Length: 507
Ligand SMILES: Nc1ncnc2c1ncn2[C@@H]1O[C@H](COP(=O)(O)OP(=O)(O)OP(=O)(O)O)[C@@H](O)[C@H]1O
Ligand SMILES: [Mg+2]
Image (tube, rainbow, N blue to C red; front, side):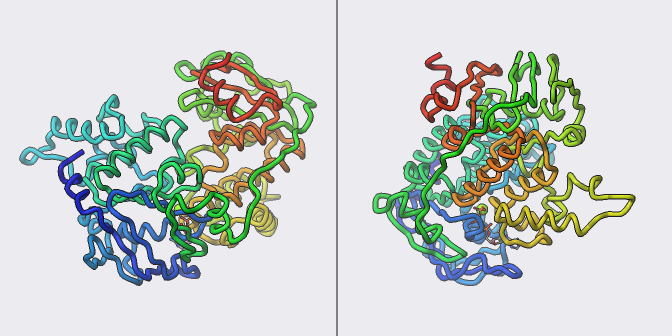
């Protein structure tokens, strides 16, 4: 850790204080008169339901808005934070909920953006490589070549590169907005040990997450927001997870589910000896009408790669795929949709949503050919469908004309699911369907998945949320290092048993 950061540890006082801050968007008071502070050397968790105002509150200190009200103090000095550059100059770095790495650029160009070392007029390549390596080392990614292009690294590496980029600027205050949503359990542990060291060196960290167990592992204090208002701040040892849920939703919620599994009937999807070299090999399985088939694996096991080949996003090298016992060869996602197969990607920004379009346009994106009847666009029919889905998934605000990029992260995830539900697919491959959604929304999405399978659709569920996977799936396939190594019946599946199997133990 650099000397600069260690020096700030000596103070260990309040690093950042927000007093009576508010932020209004057109039609929404996103942050309503909130007091918040974070001390040097602590992790302060910020929690609340989707749309509660967490990201907005933090974007305020990252300099995203020039029109907030209230006062912000850094190291007891009042400061106006109106541009990101200004925030950075004051030692504030924010890792955004939606990854913001730029393509097509290298890791080095992303990490050192705005501060690429120069020798005279020219870029200093040696310095660039060394400085990027120094940043990558802080997050345990020193094995990556700084010159690799961003699209060549995985999503979880991307998440860690974002963190490396932020740490490279030696911040005093670091905001992490749902940093673990793309990480597997091992990577989360690695991140926690990084956070632990950063804390010891005196960094003030704000940590936003929907996973309460993580909060109890990593945080010293926790603040709950609801509808833009602060409900309270507690020391982590003074509060239980039930109490936090109650603070978030305003009532007590009994978590989880006892789902019914639907009996197997006809084979819907057949996969025989499917391979994509370097990713997965000789994968064979069947999925039945009305079933929720879970796929569990550690990151790098090949789950998403398998899904991508099944919907024609990537090419297979060998093997066959059958739909209703007929072989299908899909060359792109459009052909998959035409065959009633959809893939809810784990990467909603890049492959899922058009952030500049509104909710209605996004939800209807896959349906346009169907809505054009006799050459006329059936707008009314489309709107009815959109409104039904907004209601079923409790998309907030319930307004079809909202720009999707302006919705909170969890609500964007619901729009993505709605978009695929609108196509009325027969096979849905859902990759981390509840990433970034709060407890209530998670239950809503689970109910929708249940409804769809109850109506005879086949759901293939890829999820690293083990309670979700175990409770929803009627069977679970365990993938490891590109192979299906085990199939587990519902009765055999517990969180522990699937995790052990995914780790290659107990086989
Ligand atoms: N740019 C914007 N324009 C209009 N409204 C916005 C904008 N950004 C956020 N909002 C609204 O402000 C409210 C708070 O959103 P915010 O993104 O802060 O929620 P969040 O607590 O981070 O939720 P999530 O857990 O889903 O990420 C929401 O109602 C959202 O729709
Ligand atoms: Mg958010």
